Length: 347
View (cartoon, rainbow, N blue to C red):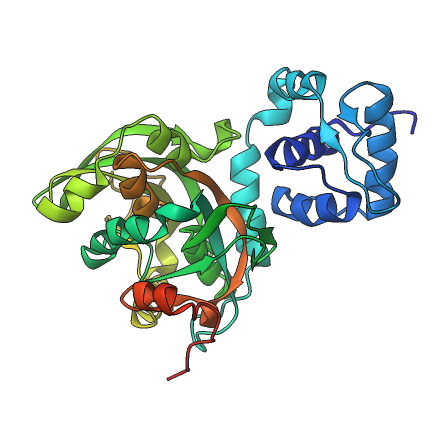
């Protein structure tokens, strides 16, 4: 290739950086779908050859046709030095890509939802789940369901690494996708930390706008120690993750119908809804739109991190069949019995 596409190049390097072991072109192709790219494995091999010549990729790990590649320190530095124009708006476009590709139908309650994936040390699973359950009971999560997978198993396209447990939580972008399936566009503006008092939202204390970041805001806030979800779940006072959306006011009747359907099937996640064209939690709303604040899908994970259990999360990680999710009240029993993969019965 005479001139490599910089955005795809950086995306490939990100995939290699996030992998805990060398991976091949087919695995890279699968992961790139979550970044909004859909190149063929052959195209990726050509890119990898160019990047190997630049010293960005190490090919020593290759073993035959199925061998993998790993990122070099120079490749890591390349990501850090990526031009701002390549990075700004990355998360916003990823939100739109996932909402468009989601297949869940609110009317039939069938299809694929968007899943966040968190991994923890395998020995910490039961303790982690015990910390998550009060968050679900308090209604501070995105719905009532989650997924669990052991090492070597898959959550959608995500394979759980050795020695780890994968926990999938419903991503709030599922709401965007459900609305879009009914021809209602949603503008995702920012993710933030909301202060709760007596179980009610008071204000945003920290925000990161989606169109100006490559990172998931709630991942940043959790690792920065800015949440107190455990306290909020137990006392009604604390700081939780949430995100700010805008929808067309003219569609609010249909929006309300979709949100009610989602809540009935266990995918409720709305913290508060504003008035047309009026500020919500002190943030202005565009004319002709109505603000909605939804719970962060990683709130249960925030409670786990707050106890000292180390987590590695990837928001907007993959798609997952809704009927394979486990209700939070059943999850500990399922884990202890080893029955994690039976599809739920439809009602």
